[in-house]
Structures are given as C-alpha cells and as structure tokens.
Amino acid sequence: MDEEKRKEIQLKRLQDTVKRAYENVPYYHRRFNELGIEPEDIEGLEDIKKLPFTTKQDLREAYPFGMFAVPDEDIIEVHTSSGTTGKPTVSGYTQKDIDLWSEVMARALTMAGAGRRDRIQNCYGYGLFTGGLGVHYGAQRIGATVIPISAGNTKRQIEIMQDFGTTILTCTPSYALYLAEVLQKENVKMDNLKLKAGVFGAEMWTEEMRDAIEERLGLTALNIYGLTEIIGPGVAMECQEKNGLHIFEDHFYPEIIDPETLKNLPPGKKGELVLTTLTREAMPIIRFRTRDITTLRKGECPCGRTLIRMDRITGRSDDMLKIRGVIVFPSQIEEALLKINGLEPHYQIVVTRPKYLDELEVQVEASPALFSDEVKHVEEVKKMIEEHLQREIGLRVNVTLVEPESLPRSEGKAIRVIDKRKF
Amino acid sequence: MKVKQISVFLENKKGRLKKAVHALAKANINIRALSIADTSEFGILRLMVPDPELAKKVLEENNFVVKLNDVIAVEVPDRPGGLDKILGILTRADMNVEYIYAFVEKKSEKAIVVIRTEDIDEGIKVLKEANVPLLSSEDISTL
Figure 1 (spheres, one colour):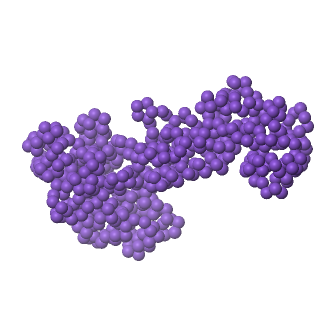
Figure 2 (tube, chains in turn green, brown):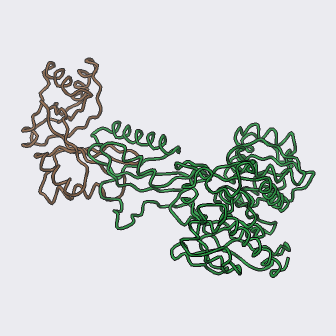
C-alpha cells in the first residue's frame, strides 16, 4: 500500500477512535476537556501530538471496566495484564475486536510461514494472559491446526512435538531455549522434529538468543510484539528478513517519544514507543506509553511490506523490571524489606542473566540486628530475607549482605536498580 | 569466666579486611588474636583485643557492623594433645562447638584456645569441673 493511501486510512480511523473515546470513555472526556481539545481538532495525523498520553497507571485507576467505550452487552471477552503489582489492567473485546485480533495474529503467523497444513504448538499460557488465545485465534483464522497445549509440562511438550509433527512453535524465547536443553538431555534426534519456525515474544531477548534457538531447534526464530493494553500479541511481527518488526500500523499507530521531554522523535531515533489503537471498539486507547524503548525504521523491506518497522525492544523507560516474565517494581522490594525488623532501608537490585534465565539479586546493608558472630546465624538471616521477599513479590531472589554505607544513598533519585542483562 | 570477643561483618571483597585492621592500627589497638570465618559471599572477622569496647567504637565509626559477644578462653599446654584433651571434655559433656581458634602465647609455654560453645555458661561449667584453667578478660588484656 502506498504511503499516502495508508495515511488517509490512518487519519480516518484516528478521527473515529478519538471521537468514540471522547464520547464514551469518561476518562478521555475529562482529559480532553482539561486540555481544551475536541475530536474535531484532529485534522491531520500530526495533530495526534495534541492528544493526551495514556499511562498504565491511568488504566489501573479505571480498573476494572472504566476504559470501556461500549455497553456491557457488547463485551464478549476480557483479558488482563499479569497484575503482579497490585491491580492488573483489563482489556475488553467486542466481537469486532476479536476479529481484528484474529486478523493481526493471522498475519503474524503467516509471516512465520504458517498455512493450512501447519501444526502450531502453542505453549503460551491460555487464560487471562493474552498470549495463548491470541495465537489460537490467529491460527484458526488461517485454518492451521492449533495444538492448544498451553505452558508447562515440558516432557509432554516434547512428546507431542514429535508425535504430532509440530511445524511451528509459539512460546517465550527463554522457554524455547529450555525446551532445546531438555530435547538434548533426552537425546531426541533432530530428524524426529519437523519444526520450521518459532514465534517468540512476551519478553525481551537478544540476537544471541535467536542464534542459539535457531541452531538448537533447527527453525527460524521470529520476534513478535504486543501488549494486553493495546490488544495482546499481534501489534508487530518480524518477517523472514529478521530485520525489525513490522508494525500493523493500519490498526496500531506508532510514535516514538523522548521519555524525559515527552516530545516526538523522528524515525531512526531511539525512544519510548507510544501506541494508539485505530480500530479497537471496546477499548480505544490513545497514545499509550508502552515504556518500551525502540527505534522506528521507514523504507521498504526486502520482503515487500511497506509497513513501518521497529527494532527489537532494548529496554524500559521506567524502572519497572520484568524478571523471568514477572513484572517487579523496586518499590515492591523496598516495601517488603521494610517489613523486616532491624533492616536498614538501603538496598540495591541487580538483575543479571547468567545464561538464559534472569536472576534477581537484592543487596542489603548488614546491620547489628542482622549480624552475629556465627556464620550459621548470618546465613539464616539471609535465607529469612530471601524467603520473605519471595513470598512478597512471587520471585526467587538472591540476597547479599553488604557493608553499611556501601550502597549509593538517595540523592534525589537513588540508583536502586542495576540491570546487567544485555538486550 | 567469659571473655569478650568482637565480631566484624566483612564483605567478601578486596581490601575489606585491610580497612578494618587499618582502623584499629590507627587507634593504636593491638590485636591479640584473630580468626576469619568466610563464606562465598561474606566473612566474619573475630578478634580478641585488650579493650573490646574501644575497638567496637573505632570500627563502628568506620561504618563496620560490630558485635560484642562472649566466648571462652582456656589455657592449654603447648604440646601435642593439648587441644585434644579440651575437646574430649566438651564431647563427653555433649557440647556443640560453634567455632574455635587458637594462638600461642610467646612469654609462657602455653597456647590459648578460644571456644564458642552453643551454650557458653554450660561450656564454662563443664571446663571448670574438669579443672581446665580459664582466662579472664583481664588475662587477655595483659597478654
């Protein structure tokens, strides 16, 4: 599609989205009034800059159904974000939204080479998480055979993979590597596998991980991007060129902003991805701040698609951490630590990925209340803190005791998180 | 007779022991005995000094976490079997030893053994009954 034609469609859809949001979602109505803007002010695509941003916090405050723009009877499905940090955010779908989701996911799977004869082993979790059903709908739209095995039970995954002759694997990249490791341990012959492609997403990963997955599973590993707030997986997908993810911009309008100044950045500049839904019915979302750091690339792709591409996500604009797929905020760790008597509120979080899985280390300053002349006792204290943190944030944590005054002190904003993972 | 020992938390990192020892040196504190318990992540420096309260204060001023605690110090003949005899007494009394370290006193022919039993009072009682000479804090400070 040529650019002019596409822009025309985008503008029409944007105007429609803005109008529906203003008229049906109290939150947007209020925000527009505060800014003194009306839907009619959107005369061109660049006018999107006049519109307010939507943050995850805004969606949380509207929990559960405050962002819906349609009557309850039109909602046919709901999903939520993982919600490990208190209230999750809810996404509602009308039949049209499910059709849209099926359409973009069908495109994504097609880009991985899926057709009617393919067997798609879908190891994304089925449930409130969008991964499972997103792939499911896309596979059914294509007419491929979907194996709705969901997450976990690796032995069974491997058995089914061989017996059913799975051709396309969908899961998180770290799970793909884990599967590869188990396949090797169980001495499964590569000849027994018919895998040709994998659609991997829901977490940040690297080119090194891609190489390792491709070599060990003998497939083409492609990156998929999406988020529950916008629709789920299917916002963007890599083509066989593996040179960035094509954003389905006829449905999701991308912008890049500087997360500090909130000013728009041109293609080619790295910044925070902001997305506006163009066709969502149940939940139109305007300028959602994804916090994901990427770069937009214009220009035709050798694959023939003219859709704009985004680079692999390389980080988060806030300090939200995603550890082994679980969202953790430093404030949660702080809260949990402060519940322990005698513990100084000085801590530092170090995230590493020694192999493929994330490790979370929390450094805590030793204090007289924690310390003793016996190693056994100090180790018990360390274990107690680890278990306490695990209960509070739902993740295994390594606690390291460090000397007093050795951690950086709050000077305005203390550096609490050191992310050593390379993306 | 209990004697005071100071324990210092050390990160398992280059230069930490030096920093603690240097602080004591600057305050003119003579270390009589020393042991380090180390794990992969941290160490515990245990010291016998003439004035434990002062040493604690000096180390705390240098941002160390310090604990004062009781241990037992006994005098044993500096010859083979000296320590074995002491441990024999504790074993027969079913006493658990948390840690132990020893040093040789140069002026006399004796070795000093520092013992931390699970129950200090019980340990002292058992050793006294066996007529093992126990050292007092004063003895330590005049060593």
